[in-house]
Amino acid sequence: MDYGEQRLKIHENVPLAPLTTLKVGGPARFFARAESEEQIGAAVAFAEERGLALFVLGGGSNVVIADEGFDGLVLQVALRGICVRAEGERIVLTAQAGEEWDDLVRFSVEREWAGIECLSGIPGSVGAVPVQNVGAYGQEVAETIVSVRCFDRRERKFCELSRDECGFGYRTSIFNAEERDRYIIASVTFALARGGAPRIVYEDLRKHFGARRPNLAEVREAVLQIRRAKSMVIDPADPNSRSVGSFFKNPVITAEEFAALSERWGPVPHFDMADGRVKLMAAWLIERAGFPRGYRKGEVGISTNHNLAIINCGRATAREIVALKDEIQRRVAEKFHVWLVPEPVLIGFDKSIV
Figure 1 (tube, rainbow, N blue to C red):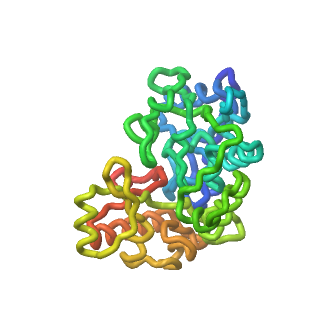
Figure 2 (cartoon, rainbow, N blue to C red):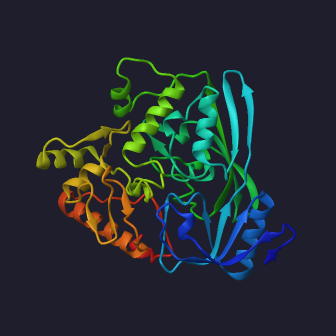
């Protein structure tokens, strides 16, 4: 059906599994693709007038959709386009939410604009990266984001949020925390360093390059190689990549909690944070809780290349994915008294299991 003057196409009973990297989940009762800001507004109006829940789907790389599907409107934001302007030694780049994230990274690296090179190979769309403040190999998008343009569902209008207003933290922002479901991201503006040096702080990259100082293109290629070795780059030929990437966040605990953990278990891999807290390695906890690489239970399992990835081994259901998630959380908590928080968004499930 067509809706409103903006000719937004509304489809019914659209399968969602093919639109996700896990390839699980049921259909959307209603589905629409917005290719303009006006169509975003039309989609919101359609949902509000019918009392429907609304879920915004990006590239489908960070979501687990229930087997029953989603009984509301699924909106895929498909705005495309990149605008660039120079401001002295920095490049201000605005990318529409529907652009592929890794395409944007490649676009920037090819022009020797530094700031997001270590975020190469991360699947999904530009509009999704501010939501959880995507980070990897020593960089976070919050470091380069200037502002985010959104549709404010509460005020029913578009607005610009500054980086500070986005409330970025470790894998968090207002978009997945206190203001979850309020904003629909339309575009993101970044400030990159023209001719800047690459960021080499992560141990894997330090080992890869040794004493040599690489350029941006070499760092991007190294990150892609490392991610491929861990099946963290989507590849139809790699069964381990049928996942959402890292399923759990690295837990952050207090210094006192870390001291108690170390006293009981000996040396525990960790990162000291600027605020005095300690970030643990979720993969280390998962493996020692009894989930080695290659662990399998029915049609779900752990990647043979990375403990953090729960994978669909072929014909898994969303219910099986969540059951393994629950088992991992429970056993890590029982052994280490640390609770693992999932990275992906769980859609269509009872809120008590999320």
